[in-house]
Length: 386
Ligand SMILES: Cc1ncc(COP(=O)(O)O)c(C=O)c1O
Image 1: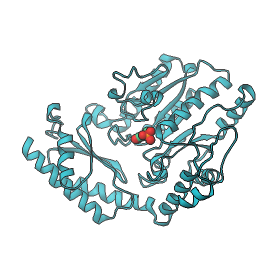
Image 2: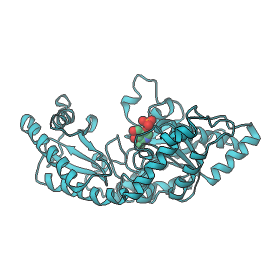
Image 3: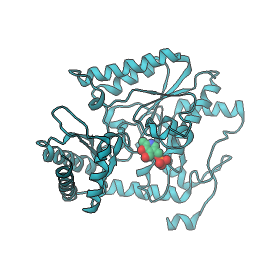
Image 4: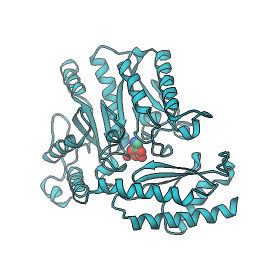
């Protein structure tokens, strides 16, 4: 950061300006990114990263003389940010209520949460196929010529740490292809190693047309995001400059040279310390320990997630998945107890779940420590409430 600040403390990236740091970072990211990604736009966080992509979706459909093809489909339980457009994409009602959202042209299809919405006797595969059919019905009801893009996180993060059920993305991507609908993959949580692969797209065989990343790009040492587009989209953006003049989008701090240096240093550490592999192996150990620890307890119905992200589903009784009364605020209670005992966890109150995103550097000893403190904390709350 210091070296970058001494070289170039700041310069804007409007009007064709750039800086060496962001150019080198873009080249490095494109080597790692899923196939087909061709150009990168830097911003300051996940919300503005997704926002930029939404604008590009609308922009290129104007260039292609398809002014009616503008709707974007997101999913209930998704989290894509809190700006006007991205809070609209977010599929959690509290982000809409009293904010006059979602805005026009943003729709939500059903969530991929098999635990909550799988039918009695339904297999994951059948559930995935039902979700794909529901998406297709929505597209047909709206008119395929009005639907421009679909956005999804590989693993739903804030909405419950929900991994895709078997066959889900294969079925969904088929529908998108059928109706010429762009696939925006939101890798803000999953990108740069969290799941044990560089990107969630790699883990679940996703073929994004556009992709947003942030968070672990700089591991929080600098607010930074990177939004990616395919070569086809880039070619259209270039056509747009001929048709409409300069590409009138950007932010004062976009492509900040200090942020680019931080991202480079962060990627050096991820690579040198093999943190993606660590997330895979230690992450697998984390899930194994959580599963083992609560296998015989009636108050844990499910352990979800992948690699270094997990959620524990609390229930009153797992034999029939009875949920706690809302007034008990079970996840807040458990989170509070964990905090008292020295463990930071994240309660997901609408889902009665506890979420964990341990640092990618965690060792198996760290994981034992996390699981031990969580175990003791959750048991002490359960003796109070059950
Ligand atoms: C999947 C996902 N997308 C987008 C965002 C928004 O990012 P930011 O808070 O940096 O605007 C988040 C934030 O948690 C996220 O989890």
